[in-house]
Length: 101
Image (spheres, rainbow, N blue to C red):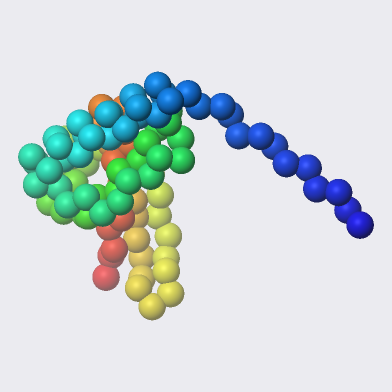
């Protein structure tokens, strides 16, 4: 029988979590005010929370102005090609997926 070892996750204080949640909240308000559709929030890292938004013309404008970048691409069976974009807002990573037909 093989013995498994587990690595402890870094300890995060309540204050760090509260700061991350407050940052997410402020970013979500700003996104909503600018007509972004928020799809999900991921807090797997308090140092870099991620907010997933629906791809829109606002995303394309941010890319064109150099305020956002494409960081990933690929292909999904039965859907086709895609690329992902991102920008930073209030300490949060805002990401979206663009499907190319």
